[in-house]
Structure formats: C-alpha cells, structure tokens
Length: 197
Image 1 (cartoon, rainbow, N blue to C red):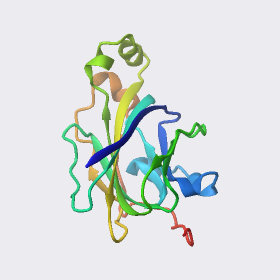
Image 2 (cartoon, helix red, strand yellow):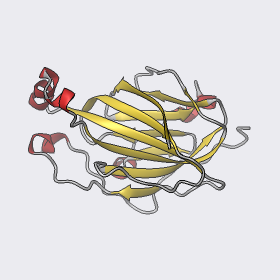
Image 3 (cartoon, rainbow, N blue to C red):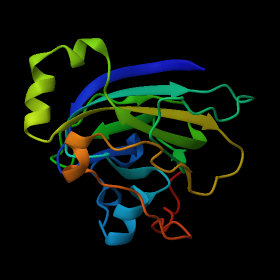
C-alpha cells in the first residue's frame, strides 16, 4: 500500500465531496441529503460521493492511499467509522471538494473499478492537542478530523457496506454535535452513471 497524497480541506456542513475527475462540473456531483443518507454516513453513486464527518468539523486532514491488487481491506485501529463504496475512475483520478465548491488539485489514479474505503476519526496528534486551536475548537464544539481514503482495485464493483459502525465512547465535549450512524439496510446509492467511457 502506498500513500498518494495528503492535505487539509476546510469543511462546510460536515460534508467532504470525493469524485472522479471525469465528473468535474457535472450534475452528478450534487446529491440529495436525506435522513437515510445522513444515518448511513454518505450519499452518492459510483464515482461521486458526499461523506459526512463525525461532528461539526471545520478542517479535515485527508490522506489518500492506493492498495496493491492482492491486498485485502485492513482498517486502521484508531478508525471510528469506516464505509466501503464502489468507485469507478474514468478520468485521470479523483478530486476533493467541500460543498462550497473549493476544489483541491486532483489526485492521479489509474482508470478502473475500486472499492473506496472511507475511514474517519478525531484528530489526536500532539501538534493539534497542544495548540491553541484545540482549545478554541472544544469551546466552540467543533472538531478536527482525519480521513483516510484507500482505493482497493477490484474486477467487479463492490456493494456499499458499513465496515465499522462508530466504535467509540463519544468524548463529553463532543456529544452535542455528534452525528451518529444508524443505517437502514440496504444502504442507499443513487442510480449508476451510464456511458462514462
């Protein structure tokens, strides 16, 4: 497994957008947020997703990883929530954005089918915990979160699945702004994109 990229992104309305570069400026990047999608932690379709943060996240650290074809899914021990979705790349990679439309440079990824694993947890590194920003975030009931997105090459598209359902004891300062998962099965995906190639 190799890390492709890492960066930070300002988050608006607790939503991180991830989409195939072929879908830039496309209506496929606008998804309906419903009670069901909020309770499952994401909405979208293969190639374009909105993932929801754990709480009222203002800034998210994002790491993008690519697995080797023979590697199986391995969740990080600190991960609070993990979701697997089908992800098809038809362009030159994937783009990240917040719902305000602030795009970051795309990450190059080979065309093909992937299982995209979204893992998220609260930021707990010493640099952040010892910073004035940490105290400001606690006082404002905001969170700083780390998201790891790992692409696993697959032959056939995978089914969407919750791999880890909020495995933690919610920190006291965080209870008012926490968005817990309570999914209804089957998980809801929007209709697939036709004729993208």
